[in-house]
Length: 374
Image 1 (spheres, rainbow, N blue to C red):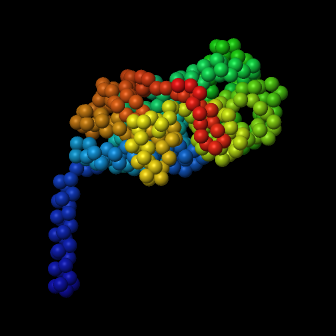
Image 2 (spheres, one colour):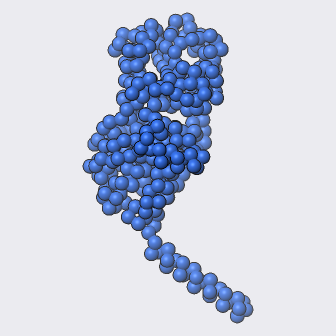
Image 3 (cartoon, helix red, strand yellow):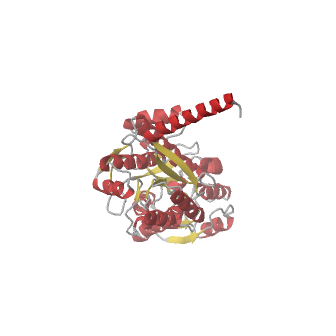
């Protein structure tokens, strides 16, 4: 090595040491894992969660971060598959991340939650509505969305009081989320004395519903509730229209995606769906809506603002507790109220919201919707 080369090497070494010293004085970022479907048939919902959470991180960092530390997101893809969710949860543990927004599908959230609780990681889901998730005595699992036992009665009340069907079919996709919400709706119909001619499950991913449609026509069904996601509901709507089966259809927030109109076309017109309130229409959120639009992002998805709120309540609890210890943050979450874009949130002992409202909407083929309840 020449003298000049050694001199340059020493110079770079000195610069590197100086940089390392500067870095060591800077606060380490607080990493938040975003766990949900990046790929797979319901990846659109993962996009909603991601843009909401990342916008919250951006806004919090602009305001100075958390006690001098910036927030940083790390994305993990579970494809809404329970086995993959377990693998993702274990990777998050191994990566040393202590805060999670997600998972999204209830079937993925439940097994992941067990791992996070055992490993001391705080998780806030903005989308999983199955009540069982928070009924196991966890201390580190929270959510910023309501439960199926809130959403089901909202749907059931509207059907009983407004639609008054003569014979109903209640269908589901045999998964935890879909079957859970379908069961809640069936309970409401049973209590009102509305005959449920069919209560059946289909396989997620099915594309041919001709036999099921023929059975519903034979049973003179005039109302169909389908606990599932938009890919199956879209195919069911389209094939029902092609078969001249004219029942009224309804589904949970899992079908409230603009892609359902791409699948079903005009057959999606008039579908009923329960969704969280349209938080993008709240005047107090106008600045956030503009921020989303400036980035070319759509703030209208049902999980966008709940995901924003998930990050915000974690960040606020870190500030209140002056800690990034998950247990201290969890204690602060249970002990305080949080003013978020989805309203003032307060958690019960199980980590569920004490109050959350679902709204019945009428869906239109152009992807827009009209509120039918408050």
